[in-house]
Image (cartoon, rainbow, N blue to C red):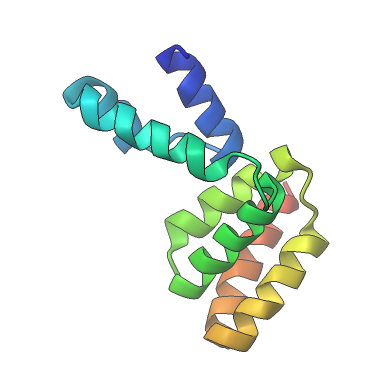
Length: 116
């Protein structure tokens, strides 16, 4: 797969391509190929669908209160047909395990992205 196709696939999954991936493509092609290969393997449909994996990623990013990661993961959710209601349900699990701040953090990002 050509590098442009790989980056487009990544963009479809997470909403935008982080600058680090473009930088790695130039500065360390071997590491870039390894990271992109792992990314492809992890996100491929298996026992869990890409959609399920995306909801897990959103919940983890919210639990970690990582503003960049939660927005990037949510930005890619519409590409997989994920609704705001599905994100809300995943964030309720986050709330149960990681607390109200994680829920609020994820919910605010989801509302911002889905209201555009």
